[in-house]
Image 1 (tube, rainbow, N blue to C red):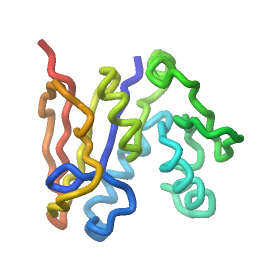
Image 2: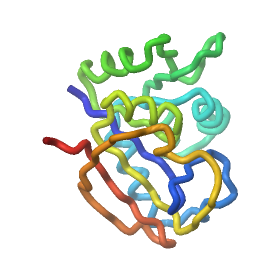
Image 3: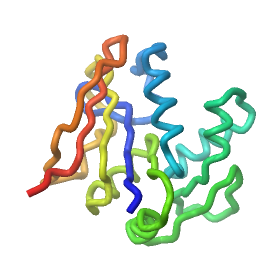
Image 4: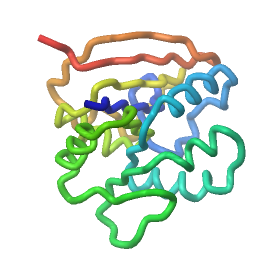
Length: 177
């Protein structure tokens, strides 16, 4: 069974909301981690908002990272009608069942970038094998928080890593009884 890895940018107080001005500038130490993460993946899993932002940028980007991003199959959780381009397939209305089916297929890990609402749904249904939080050194005080809609979610810390510019990568897995 292929694992599902969720990777999120969050503030110290857990805010994940996209396009927030709080994010620290890119740090060169982030690059190797994000590159390794993408190149180890077999497919991307995205919410519609993240998909649209990525699809507007990556098809015209250049370099090995962009080539890999463009080549990977993408699965999009969306309720909006209309065709998807950029090597993407819409998931059906039962997102957890569709993701479970994707996990049972052969191939490399499924990587979910951002897409906080989708990440919450998959965490709630016990489908996430690894949760990677890139924690930025700022307290926002308001906004959507990654654990807002979740209760009783026992996790086990698997690894920690400093990425530079004060960003800490915390990697969690489901707690095993």
